[in-house]
Every structure is written in C-alpha cells, then in structure tokens.
Amino acid sequence: MIETTDLTIRSVSVGEMDNNVYLLTSKSSGDQVLIDAADDFPAIRKLLAEGAADAPGGKAQVKLIITTHSHWDHVRALAEAVQATGAPTAAGTEDIDAIEVPTKIALDHGEIRWFDGFELEVIKLRGHTPGSVALLYRDPHGPAHLFTGDSLFPGGLGNTRKDPARFASLYHDVVERVFAYLPDDTVVHPGHGKGTTLGAERPHLQEWKERGW
Image 1 (cartoon, helix red, strand yellow):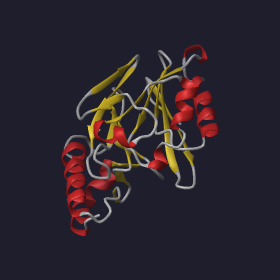
Image 2: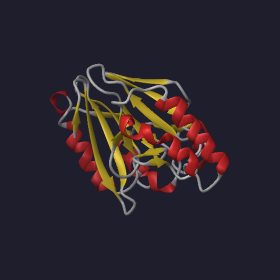
Image 3: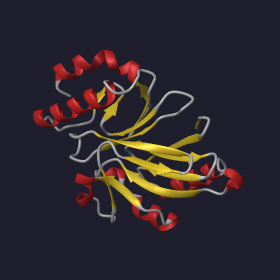
C-alpha cells in the first residue's frame, strides 16, 4: 500500500499475466476508483475490503471503474466488479466498442474526473490500443502518481506489434504528454509488474526510439 496525505493506493497482481489492479481510496470521503478489473474477482473483492478500512468509519464506495485499454487480460473480472459494486465504467473513447462489458463513460485526453477528496486527469497515450489512457493523480503533498496501463513500463513502451506507425504514435504521446509534462519524481504504476519513476526512465528515451519498441 502507498499512503499519501489524502489518498491510499492499494494494488494486487492477478492472473497468469501478472496484471496489476489498483484501488484508490479517499481518506476523507471513502470515494474509490478501481483501475483495471483484470482477473480473479475474489482477489479484487479482498482488495476492496482492505480499501474500505482506509475510509472514514470503514464506509467506502467505488465511484468509477476505469479500464486503461480494451485488451482481454485487463477486463476479465470487469463484469463481476460491476455487478458487485454497481459502479459505472469508463475507458478511452476509441476503445469502448472493443470492451464486451458495457462501458458508458468515454474518456478523452485532458479531461478531469472529480471525486470527493481527489481528482484524476486523463492522459491519452495512443498506440498500444487506439484509446489507451493513463490516469494522473497529483498529490498536493508529494510526487504525482501515474497509472499507465500497458503504455509505459520500466524499460520501455507497451507492445505496438512491430508496427512503426503505432510505435511512433505511442512514443510521441509518451514523450510529449508524460515526460515533457511531468517531473522526474512522478511514480509510474504500470499494468503489469513493478513500478518505476519518470526520472529512472527518462535517460533511455532515445534508446527506445532507436530500437523501435
């Protein structure tokens, strides 16, 4: 668990692909956002129960389930999560039609989603999928936290299937919308595996560009 002044960030790794599921909980209101209901709903249910303890009086409510992109391994428990929480679902505009679970809220680049006690900024990172999004939480008392889905990992960008146009799109967005926009102490929470910081990855941008992945 990561604890900020206003928010707790909990996560669990699920499934054979080591997918990360993130839960953000406001300490003041109990408002929660679940990011990528990837698989193993019993594990997600346990995560929600643990997150409830971070809320005032143990009363938490999932206000939104955000899917960072439409790939199958990020949505396997989405239907169960919706049924259990009653929360609305959101994803990048261009990815919504590819998600089997009805997803009603379309996310576009630069928009802010407000919750009681915190807000998330949507950063569209096109290339891994057409509508991939990252979610930015700006901690007023510490480093920012960026939930990048499969667009940015320690050591490189997400898979663009050896398509130069898709790689160029993703590289452009990551450079302009992430590295040129946010400071080095920004914490990166990827869709799989361990996290990193922008400062740790910034020296390798040219290397990524030259290798094309």
